[in-house]
Length: 100
Image 1 (cartoon, rainbow, N blue to C red):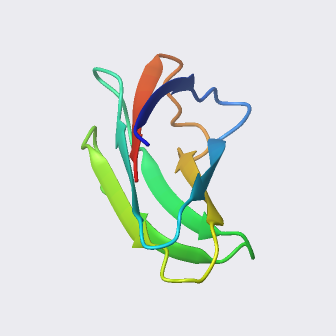
Image 2 (cartoon, one colour):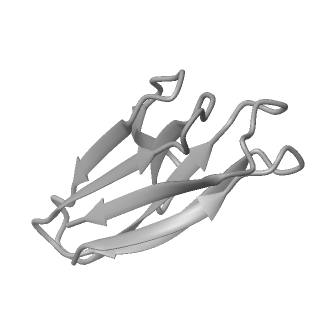
């Protein structure tokens, strides 16, 4: 079901990732909201084989959303990856909303 997470990306590590199990027939949507004054935050969805299956790469403090539908025959896990370019991380908290 739905969930909301918060995270921080520091300059030393340019990404955070979250593993989500998505039921058959469900659409998984991830939305990242950068912190006030936040820099460039990118959002990628990877499948369990490590392939990017959806992405949103808006920058400059924009809200990013990416979605993928599980059309398989079994629950499938996806990784939501929130990333900042190295050196551009904002140590304030960002918000990640997940729905399926």
